[in-house]
Image (cartoon, rainbow, N blue to C red; front, top):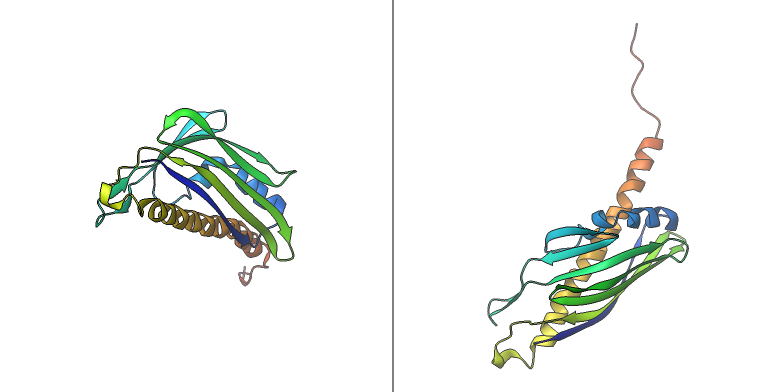
Length: 174
């Protein structure tokens, strides 16, 4: 069964847009934040293959291991991370756009994901409800991903703040 995915989510991080763009520039590190990631393979040229652990429901006997490859590109000037599917890789074709811009408190980013999961094994009895169920599972993964991305973005800022604080150590007597 083919299941289409079309969702949009957003989040805010306490980090400047420039620092956020620098964070996104390490695509492999950003992709490693995706929940249920079983394996990440660098295909070269900004292309990666993501293989996820099974998602689904034991009760409904639905378990699907999503695998997809995409070419990723960061455009800091436009405030975007985009990705497009690599044909013939995996069992899903997923496009995405992560757009970011500065706010008074940091960077607001929104994620738009559109694509199709192919060959999802769904028992006949559950086919009427499976698309909504699978979309809900995938959307929950995206929410976790955005939370992890916001946390990762906040970490460098915490390190900068800590480094900027004066040392409270007392000078040693000679």
